Picture 1 (cartoon, helix red, strand yellow):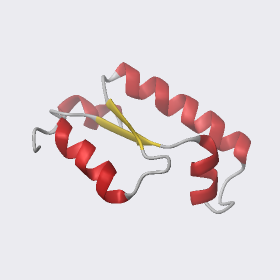
Picture 2: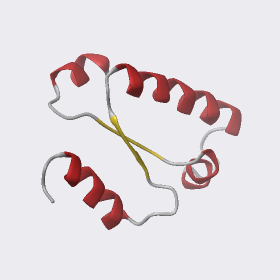
Picture 3: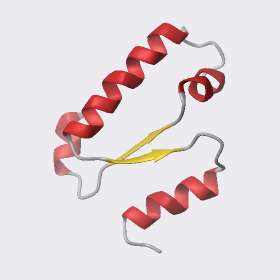
Amino acid sequence: MLALSVRAYVRVYVTASEAELFKRRCGEVGLKFLVEQIRLYDVLARLVGSYRVDTTGRDVDSSLREVLGFLGFR
């Protein structure tokens, strides 16, 4: 992930609240694992200078518009 992000012109980290991600994963992973995963991804995203898009309670179109805005498509 880090090797790929170095080459990217714009880095975007798409996330949601712990509760939302847990619901979306449908019990695929435990909450404790998910919390740790989010913590690690947050650190990595900061290290590579990613834009952060929180999709909690948002529809796909709204989230996509935000990402496209980072890319200069307004």
